[in-house]
Image (cartoon, rainbow, N blue to C red; front, side):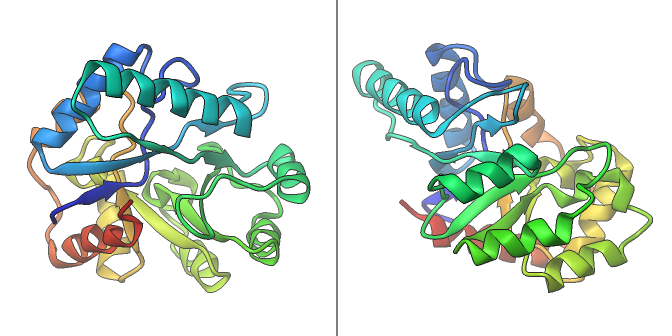
Length: 230
C-alpha cells in the first residue's frame, strides 16, 4: 500500500549486524523505496553481551543517521525503536526504564533461535503488566516450534502479536520456514510484516517469487502495517 511503513530493519550504522556505514544505510533505503517501502521504523538489536545497545546509543545513532540523510540525500528521516531479546537483561530493562516502542505501546521482541526462554509466558505477561504490547519478530523462524504448532497458539492466547519476515514467503530462509509462514498466515495468526533487512542481499532477494499458496492473509498483514504510519 501507499506509505508502507517497515517496522523491522537494521539501518543504523555500526551498532549491530545491519548497515555498516551511513552510505550503506542510504543504499538500503534507496533500494527498498524502489519496491514500495516508504517509511522506516528501524530496530537495532539489544542483546546483552553481544549488541549492548541502550536507549542512548540507539537515539544517538538515529540522530546521526538522520542528519546524514538530510545532508546527503532526499530521504525521509527514519525513526528508531529496538528489537529486544527476551532474556534476564531484558527483564531488568522492563523494570527500570522506558522501552523504545514502535508506536504507542507496541514493542518488538525476539528470542534465541536455539530455544525459547524457560519462563516465556511469564515474560509476555510481565511485558503487558508494564503497559506494553509485545510483537514477536519472525515467529516462523523458530525451528523448535515447527513441530509444536500449539506453542504458537499459547503465545497468541497470552497476548503476543506476530510479525512475519517478508522474505520468509519467498523461501529465503528455507522451505521449512516458508511452510510455517504459510500455516501461520492460513490460521490468521500474523498481524504485521517487516523486512528485517540487514544488507543488500536481503533487499535483492525481494525479487524472488512467492512460494506460498495463499496471498490474501499476507496482503492483509501488509495492510495492517498502516497502523504505524509516521
